[in-house]
Image 1 (cartoon, rainbow over the protein chains, first blue to last red):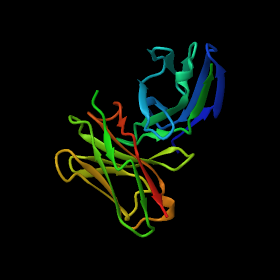
Image 2: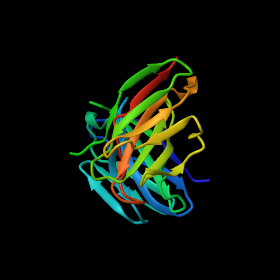
Image 3: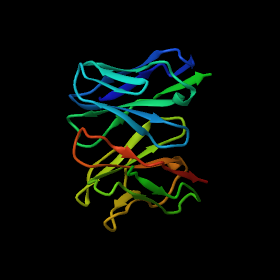
Image 4: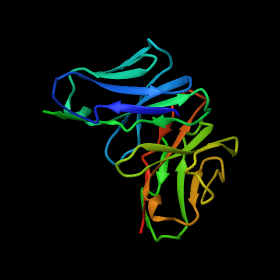
Length: 111
Length: 114
């Protein structure tokens, strides 16, 4: 069964304290892996798509990397406005449309 | 920046009543989706829709659910007879082209069944 797990469940950082969020996935052939940011009561906001092991994408303080079993979202020198839940999601080659989400990591950045 | 818009943002309904949630996907997108998120739980896939028909659906999407694209801009989710366990945030999403490309989500419609 295709599934996505994320760790840690919650992370509390001081402003400027860099860290990484983990996404582990089991999927029958990866078509794409997605990172989204979700603020409370809002819809997921797209951050990155990764397609193959070794690929990396960057946006401001965020960098996403992909291996054959995991993806990492690295946050460099975070600011309070980076506080949100970060969702990892995968699409399997066996499914044309369905995207499977992980439970998310709730990030709090303290000034 | 183009966005997916959803109405209503919040609806309270009596158990057993019918509910229609509405969405306007991004204008040049061809693939449309409904997802839901029960409070404190994962975002779950419900259904995908392309070329005026359902292309894939989950086990959650049973006979009480239906989707429709009644005109060139709207995409709707109907829940025929709501149950307490249907209380959730429902997200509409759209994508411009097939598999692997980015899915863009709306802000959600919060449904409370009482």
